[in-house]
Amino acid sequence: MSELANTLFYVSTILSDTLLSTWSSSTEDKLQLVYFGMKLTLMYGGLLTTAGGVIMWFSAPTRSERGMQGKYMIISGFAMIIFYFGSSIFINFLQVVIWESLGF
Image 1 (spheres, one colour):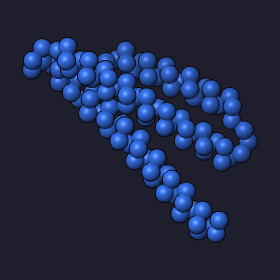
Image 2 (cartoon, one colour):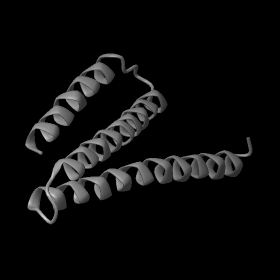
Image 3 (spheres, one colour):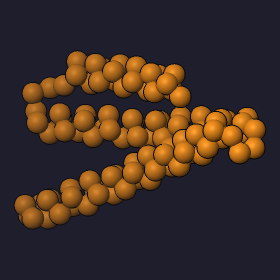
Image 4 (tube, helix red, strand yellow):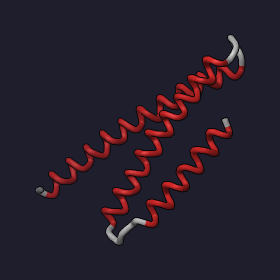
């Protein structure tokens, strides 16, 4: 489990370094890159966590601690995926509300 967390941390640091090096001075571009990084982290982190949990759950003996950890990883991976879609919908809703309030 700690290997998965270390891998996700390593990937997120590479992603953040890449995003920081390509930032321009515009605030809108910075927010778009933060949003893009959040979506990538939630999407791929959720998929990796779910896949790791499924592998751990199916390879564990019945009613073992490792099997329970696999179930928790599956649940947390699905929660990340649901949060990915929910945050995308929420941000798009805010964009529509802001655009219409500005009269565009």
